[in-house]
Amino acid sequence: MVIKVITRHYPINYGSLLQAFATIKVLEKLGHHAYIIDYRRKSVYSLKYLLSKVDLNSGLKKTIFDVLRAFFVSFEHHSVERKFVKMRKRYLKLTETYYSCDGMAVLKADCFVTGSDQVWGIDRYDETYFLPFVNDGKKIAYSASFGKTDIDEKHFDKYTKWLKLYSHITVREHSAADLLNKMGIDCMGVVLDPVLLLTKDEWNEFIEEENDNTKCDDRLLVYYLHNNPELRKYVKGFSKRWNVKYATLSPTWHHLIAGGEKIYAPEIKDYIKTIKHCKYLITDSFHGTVFALLFNKKFSVILPNDGTETRIKSLLEQIKLEDRIITDLNEFSIMERDIDYNPVNEFIAKEREHSIKLLDKMIKN
Image 1 (cartoon, rainbow, N blue to C red):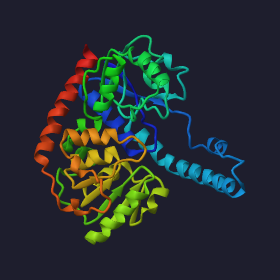
Image 2 (image 1 turned 90 degrees about the vertical axis):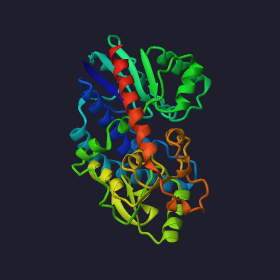
Image 3 (image 1 turned 180 degrees about the horizontal axis):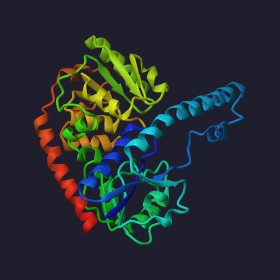
C-alpha cells in the first residue's frame, strides 16, 4: 500500500524528526510505501510574527528589550533551521511541500495516518492534522497525542467532530484514551511512540555503531527543551554533589546557559550517540527519556513546566520507573539507585510487538 503520514516533523526538535523517521521505517518493514506529508505551519519564529507581538505601550525599556529579543530569537531559529532542513531531506521521505490544506486534496494514498507526537495539541490547534482534505482513502491515527488534555468546550466539540471521521485511533498516553472515551470515540488502545518500535539493534545500525554500551564517558548529560530555571539549578547541585562534569546538549543557543560543556545542534546520529555514551542523563524531554530507556542508561527526569508532562509520566508509570522523576530539587541520591532494566526491556519488547500488530491491523482492516 501507499501510505502518507501527517505528523509534527518540522519543529526544530530531535524527537519530532526521529519519531517521523521511525514511523516511515516501521511502515516500510510492514511492506508499505510510506511518505511524510511535508506540511509546514506558519512559523511563530519569523521576525515579522515576533515583532507583531511586541507591545508598543509597555514602556520604552521593555519595548526595546522585546524588539531586540525578537531579532535574537528569529536569528537563532533560522541559524539552526538550516541544519534541520538538511537532516529532514536526508532521513525523511517527503511529499511536495504544503503550507496549508489548500492543494492537499490532490494527495493520493491507500491509507492516511495521523501521528505520532502532539499532533492534536490544544496550544496550537490546527485542523490540518485531522486530515480534512482526505475524501478518498482510509484515515487512521497511530500513537497520537493531545499534549495537554484540558480542553475547553468549544474545542472539545471540534475535536469530537473531526475524530469521529477516523476508521481507527490509537494514542500515546492513557490520558488521551480517557479523553477519547469522554468524546464517545472508540480507541483501540495506548501504544508505543514510534521511536520505541525500533529496537536498540536497529538504532545502533542507524548510527553505525556496535550494539554495546561499553564506550561511556564520565559526563553527566543535560538535555532539556523547556525554559526551566529549576532544572538548571538542580543540574549544578547534582554536579557539585557528585563531583562530575556535565555537558548541555541543545539545538538552541539560549538553552546552553545551563553551563558545562556545550553540545550545540549536533547531527541526528551524534545526538543519539551522545545519549548512548553518557554516564548519566538529566532531561525534561520525552524522547530524551525514550533513548535513555532504549540504551539502558541511568537517568532522571524533571517534568516539563508547560503542562505537557503527561506523556513522560504515562510512559514511566507503565514501566514502573516513576521514581526516576525528581520531585525534591535538593535530593541527589537518585544517582546511587540502579535501574533493573530486565523487566523494562521485556515490557518494551512485548509492547513493541503489540503496537506493531495493532498498526498493521488498523491499516488492513
